[in-house]
Amino acid sequence: MLRYIAFALVATSFAAAALNSAPADSAAAPAAKAAASAPPRPAEQAGDLFAVNNIKVDATAESAAIARDLAIGQGRAQAWTKVFHRLTATSVWPKQPQLMDAQLQRLAPGVDAVGERRSTTRYLADATYHFNPVAVRQLLRQSGVAFTETRSRPALVIPIVADGGFDAMSPWAKVWSEPSYRQGLVPMILPEGDAADLAFLSRTDLAQLDWAGFTPLVRRYNASEIVIAIASQDGKTVQAVQISPAGRAASSFAYAQPNLSGIAEALTDKVADAWKSRSSVDYGTKARLTADVQFESLEQWAKIRAQLAAIRAISDVDVVGLARNEAEIALAYFGRLEQLRDSMAQQNLDLANGPAGYTLQIRGSTADSSP
Image (tube, rainbow, N blue to C red; front, top):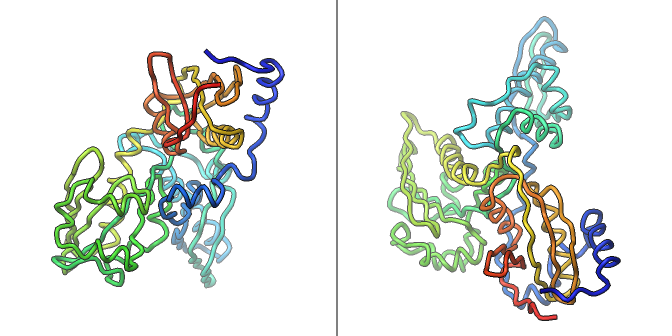
């Protein structure tokens, strides 16, 4: 049982702070503490889930201006499909809302075009479409479509050609350097290929290792899984092995003609689909729970509040009481409890259920629950 201090005033002020503030240092621990805890090497910053890059648009009409409008409109429809696929599992794709041009314009009002080429009747460009996140969420909820914005920790891809080892300069590895593979819900990242990596990646038994065998890379890149992708010399087939705490899964991809980019995209979709099937939230389902939050300092308490605020499935957080090293919160959330746990885990939060009820703390914390 918590021994609350200044219950009414403190709880009210912290509840307001939880909704309206996020301290500037809440996103990262102080440098000294980070160094002491030996954090994993940071991955490249993930892209905007609601931006779709490099849509090639091309249309012909009676004038260049009309051709441009036609091309941009056609590209916007393609971009909408990409955003929908990015946020939903493949089983949900047949439920994609079919939208008119005017609806799509309201959904994606921002367009950046580069490399424009025109004639009197033709327009070509590479376009980036910026979707309105609030409008997309509202549309999907109104359509009864389960979706997720929760990003998984990255999947570390180890591209290998035939019987060779990892080579960062191989055509197969260079395919994975395309930024779009890091833009989805499961960012697909490459090893940096420095001396520390190569000492491990030069092993000839990589495809036979289990999850524990990849501990050095998992820790360095904070990886959720390892994907070994072995391409044939002719670039027509790839044998993939996904290794995670849950075990191993093998798959193969083949094309009639060399198509490493197409195979990389198909493999990325396969990896992401398992995550989306697990984490997609049905916003028609809502529940509540009360948890005892344990922390070591007010700075850590502020960080926990900021991390909770970043979880889209949580609709409301109330601070019920506050003591020296713990607080009691009541939160409302959408979806299933295991999905809430997954979302919290991505924010480095650990939600556990014990004999005394739910407890919440920063993962790996040694917070003392005594007052």
